Image (cartoon, rainbow, N blue to C red; front, side):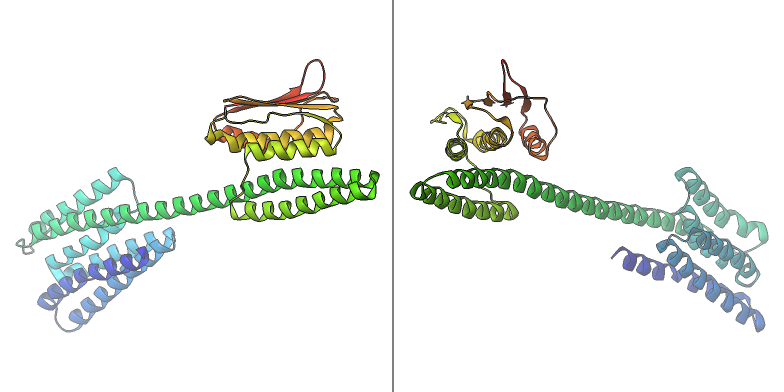
Length: 346
């Protein structure tokens, strides 16, 4: 759209060579008349070339054509007399558009001054001098305003593209984080329950395998929800799932049964914390007991397992990102006298 507007503006600027043609028609005859018209055609072609070079950022060609326009205007001066000065309204703004503000201002002032001072100095008609000077200033301001608008539009398009890129990247990160958290918990539960079923009598094993089937279906639903952005994670639900997972893993569970003390806006975040914490206990802790404590502003998952140094992992990293987004703080590390503690405070 900006390129189309620039072309329309350029076609409008071609009125200046037509005005200069009136001077050629008035002051030239015969071969001079033909030469004057050909020079004006060449000036118009150079100006269109300047516009196209600007669109393609071909600045060497741009400045070469501006210089050529200036030379052609000088050659046209004996044939068009004072009317050649109207071409300054094309040449000066073209040069001023690609230089700094102070240089551009100086060029416009010099161009306007030339339109006023040259005609009396060389004996041309001075009646239209001030009109030409005004045309130079007005056209320069018009080109400057258009260039500013075009630059702002370009920056806006770039900003919109960057916002779209960041949104896409954030969505990919969200899906990756949710898939890790959701599938990590579900697959751990399926693995533990499958191992438990192998050691049980057929009737009990059948019940565990039915639970495995339900977990698999839930995992599939969770994946679909994560991809569509509508995962449903609640603190109460995660406490119930965590209690079942710890039971299947043979770990004593000390989990709260009520979550009314937790504000509604924090229950989803605390649910993610419980999910990640309990899953890690079952996977890594080799613990005999897991304790979850919940208050209005904190949630803590502790175990009495082997402990160890805090390591980096996509699960804790994703959880840390969630907590930071909510304005909270996550700490994870060895607990006293033994085991591991994951704590989030908002």
